[in-house]
Image (cartoon, rainbow over all chains, first blue to last red; front, side, top):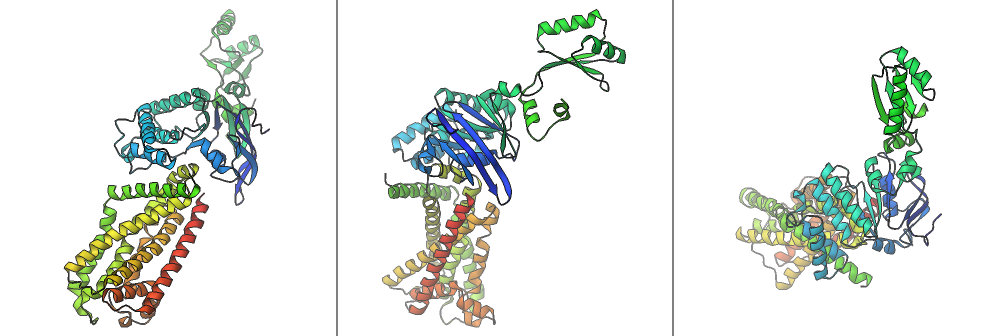
Length: 318
Length: 253
């Protein structure tokens, strides 16, 4: 399971962590390939931050083994720390220092020579579009700027593996896009990214592989497409005004499922133009009046709802 | 770089950062200075004549005001330590392998420097108000030594309190008992003149022996007995604060 030789940046098996009698992680296995983006998706309280804290040496697990960048997080803490960068859930910048001073503080703590620290800080300010604000104290920064500074501080040490705990929570859409772009650039440069998120869109957008965490367990793992295949397929939903139309349509389209209360019919299909046209032609041929038509393709939301504890009747009724 | 020199370099970096906080926020020094000066006015000009302490009241009160200055100056330390813990800044430092010692030492040294600056101010004002110390050079060194030991003790206790507190606001409360303790000591009136209960408390609490030691040194009549007690208290409180801080720091992980 834990296969370091084969390009695993992060390999965790059987992680358990409990606080008193509250189980937070209940046997988590993860395997993240080098140079990929891995998203840990889960609702609040699923154990995402605890997982990040264990993987980043901040928390010792009760049981299980974690190898990050080829080193055991419990016994080779120092080597792991040298390879990773972490941006926590709340931007951890020093409010009273300016943006530039924050970056230089990181450079000093990494024991970079003064001139190199200056150069790295200048480059990061430039790259994150913070040059104009570089001399302002971080307390005056907007949420998006703080996040960018936070990420820039993480990058001073040129980490090979970066952990981002809910990197875009609380950001406006534009700042979120900026953070996504930065993440893509990092991956293009060979960095491995482990991110946690509550946003399915984010996981879908960025991650090669996604693990869904619920109540301290990984309930599903795979690519976005693989996960989508695990929920009911695409379908077309037809709504009628008269019971008679529904009756006739249900007879003609015998592969469909009907809902008498809502006067709707659910017809399996990919929702493509060609199959849609064929469907409409069949309805026309039997002079069935359709009030409303909608195409439904499953997205990660369906997967999420299906797999985590917030099950809906639609999924369980399948 | 060896482990020790790396830790020293990190301590220096963290100290520079903390001092920058202090210069960005000079109110922290002002707060430490202003209350003792107000108290001094009150005591020396308004109430001082009411007490017969055997010497000029400014001479009597100044050692107590030095103690008060230390106590009023530690609020920002508790708050600063706590916000490092609660904002997640500490996690960033821990992942960078910055040692616990570097983080905590820097806070204690910052407290030390800030308090010393405030004490120099307060002594300056005391001199203007009639404080006439008769200490020799060696006795002044003794004064500095006792002050440094006292700040160390109170500094470590405050750092520990800041680590243990849940929020920066509650950490700020660390200063409250310390602000009250000088009044229940021989800072402003001799313990012997207090009512029963208060008198015994004042006689045996650590501040009284520290203040008596300073008073003895500043008036050129040091008392070895109170000096030994004061140093023992400082060493004991420093040890408690240091150990408590270590435990709290690890717990926060």
